Length: 70
Image (cartoon, rainbow, N blue to C red; front, side, top):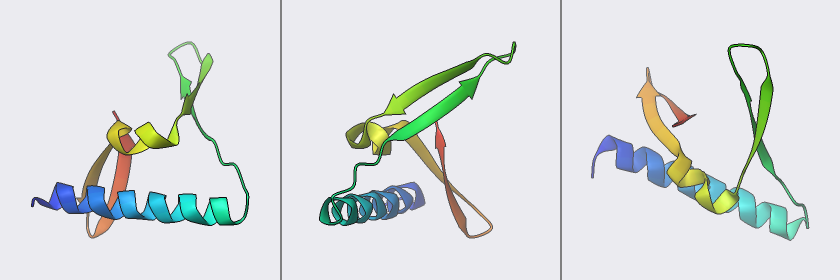
């Protein structure tokens, strides 16, 4: 496995844990991404939880793991 695979697995496990906690607490969480274009017009995107792991790119910088949207 590459380091990127490890990051993906860790983030996937964290998201799964978060989902389980939210279900246990009967909470609904929705991720909204706000994009601002060059004219400062905002666009909102709702990201489905099931597609979140494939929408992120994982990388490490000085030991900190970060996920960015493609």
